[in-house]
Amino acid sequence: MGEEKVRMQVDRELNPMEEMEADPEAAAEELGVAWDFDEREPEKTTPMGWLILIGVLLLVMGLGGLFMLIRGEKEETRKNQTEQEERRKQTGEAQELLERVEQVVRRYLATTSVEEKSRYVRHRARVLPLMREYYRRRELTSARFQSIGDIKPAEVENYPFFGIDVMVEGKSDARLLLVEDCADGELRFDWESEVNYQPMKISDYLEKKPTEAMEFRVYVGLDTFYGYEFSDQERYQSLKLTFREEDEFLFGYIEKGSADGRGLAALLEARGVSLPLRLRLRFLPDTKSRRSVLVEKVLATSWVQIEETESAVQP
Image (tube, rainbow, N blue to C red; front, side):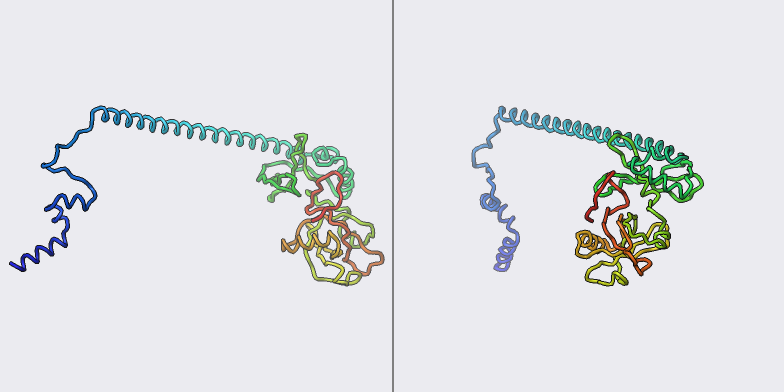
């Protein structure tokens, strides 16, 4: 009997819900709720007016949620329509630009005279004499346009250009043209960078060693060769100058203490590769070196002349 009493107490400790069932009031207090018992007053009912009010409130809330859902769907639809219209507009503008480019490229490549070709180039007044001199040394040949391979935006010294890969008949490699969308609405080609215009052939320059300053389009990289008139490493920064489609090269030397010298050295060190630049070069009088030239000015950090007339720029 004693063991059974102990066992019942242990079971009650392990199963408190049994105790709550035995003592409903204790259970109510333990769970934080209040229950009604038969001995108490009958359960009160919610007034009908409140039930109606609650029903109306739920209906209003449901209608409000439905309205918000419908309005959200309409706004999403309007947003999608706006985005679609913007995409159609951009597609139309891109197609229009492509058609303009194809027409101008076709005419530009088909030209057979210098004067006619100059109508499509930037800075015509300045460039036409250069074109006449250039084509006296080589033949001007026309080409038949085939297709546009790619059009890529190209920012040159903070000016907007775009590069065009053009396929021409009979050629497997694309021909790169640089185009400016000019303020007057015309598309014009940068002829100088296209042909890599130089004031004279590099082989002639090495042979004649002119002492007057001349402007060249070159690839520039840092170098460690010092000699002849430029052996002072404290005074000069050595540069290696190479050319497009040329085996010849030059050693250029720029004053380390000059603004151009400091800027150019910093630019080349930061990039770590040779860069296309426009430089003003000259041989020193009575030079003993075949390839060593003085870099008088850094004209531009690209092969493109932005303005009709320009002063030297800082790299």
